[in-house]
Amino acid sequence: MAPVDAASFHDALIQRLGSERVLTGAAPMAAYESDALTAFRARPRAVVLVESAEEVVDVVRLCAAAEVPFLARGSGTSLSGGSLPVDDGVVIAMNRLNRILEVDPVRRIAVVEPGVVNLAVSDAAAPYGLYYSPDPSSQSVCTIGGNLAFNSGGAHCLKYGMTSNHVLGLEVVLPDGEVVELGGDSLEGVGPDLVGLFVGSEGLFGIATKITLRLLPRPETFFTLLAAYDSLAAAGEAVAAVVASGLLPGAMEIMDNLAIEAAEAAVGAGYPLDAEGLLIVELEGEKQQVAAESELLLEVVRQSKPYLEHIASDADDRMRIWKGRKSAFSAVGRLSPDYIVQDGVVPRSRLGEALTRIQRLGERHGIRVANVFHAGDGNLHPLILFDGRVEGDLERAEELAGEILRLCIDLGGSITGEHGVGMEKRQYLGEMFDDADLDAMRRIRTAIDPGELANRGKMFPDAEAPALLSHGPHPLEVAGVISRE
Ligand SMILES: Cc1cc2nc3c(=O)[nH]c(=O)nc-3n(C[C@H](O)[C@H](O)[C@H](O)COP(=O)(O)OP(=O)(O)OC[C@H]3O[C@@H](n4cnc5c(N)ncnc54)[C@H](O)[C@@H]3O)c2cc1C
Image 1 (cartoon, rainbow, N blue to C red):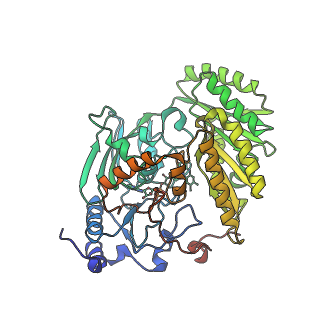
Image 2 (tube, rainbow, N blue to C red):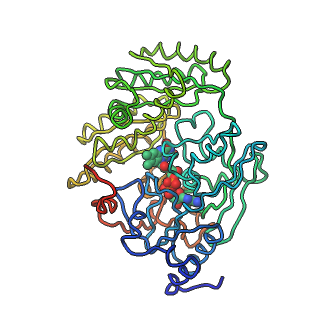
């Protein structure tokens, strides 16, 4: 394709996609101005609705020729501003690339387009007794493309690993429009692990257009235990004891009282409203093995003295328990008009200490913090409640969010477990990594994308951030689509 200058860029987009798939202007682009980090908005130059990998290649080539930054957008559920538009750039909406191209039960793989919704992969694999393991709580809406950009995790990633452990091969459009194939259809790769390099790169290395995923056999049976405690620390100690016992559950999650209250109000999961800490532990596997492990689990958990325990009686009961946990983030919207979902990691052995200190920080700022976390891998999700309509509330909430991240670093953890750095946590990257590390990251980025066109302004602390529209009512609120009442 011949290079185009910036002036004819817009016409070239229309020529390639047709005017109905090139959105411009405030109203048509309103839904793309923000992602699930709703406190921030930015306006792109255009939003393009692509329908094939070839169209992605052509749009990226046009962007490269005109030096226009771009980013891919899946379902826009990023909690770190990862899919916030880049300044004067193009948003490439990937949702229409949503075909499951192949499910091969013999090789136990699925080949999918990036706009396929996470849960749809398991649905397609179910007739073969297989499933796709990583299960973000947003799995009924988020896309595989977004999952691989953030190396997303979920409640059941404790045993089988995050997205990076389940992506075998990729077709990628590099930021200059070149198409490359990385990896293959098995875990036994030859040469450097370029799939591993791409997964978790937050859209900075280009756009994935075809993804080969690993499928696992569905566990024969589950044993799901709910244990309620009168202190959050006791629930945390139970997790440490389970780990020390040598058991490896499929999931180990904790919710605090505020999160329980929200989940109950939203979905009526049957959680005890008076619990200060609620532990959900799930074993999975073959019947005999789960039966033996469940005895040990009960013994270990009982030593931590929960005041109530409940074992899921059947599949419906198990689904009800998980529905409460998986709805917790969005349910918190019932307690507060706005909230920031923070994502940090601490060593498992310091979970109790981290939670106590987060509680104290919240009290000092006069801000309520609900806690939901993947306790098994020390991945905290403090939900910081604020009211964006109150002058200074957002800034106070952001300050607290920053203090929590510094606490995670201080305790030997990380500023992100699974939601990525995105826009929101850029300034903390330099507190976790030294200059040499940051320099190495930058050199890899510019080797792949010298013009820094792909998702410009994200992740690096000194990258030029998108010009944000003023904080204020969300465009969907103005349009009457969502309400804070
Ligand atoms: C209620 C709720 C619960 C959540 N629970 C979890 C959870 O349990 N675990 C978890 O890890 N996350 C969770 N998240 C965060 C979010 O759902 C994940 O980060 C998810 O992977 C984002 O997918 P998406 O399709 O919405 O991506 P988007 O938000 O659209 O994009 C995210 C990033 O991916 C990039 N991207 C998108 N498509 C491609 C592509 N084809 N190629 C390259 N880059 C691409 C974008 O440029 C952007 O940087 C939750 C979010 C919400 C709102």
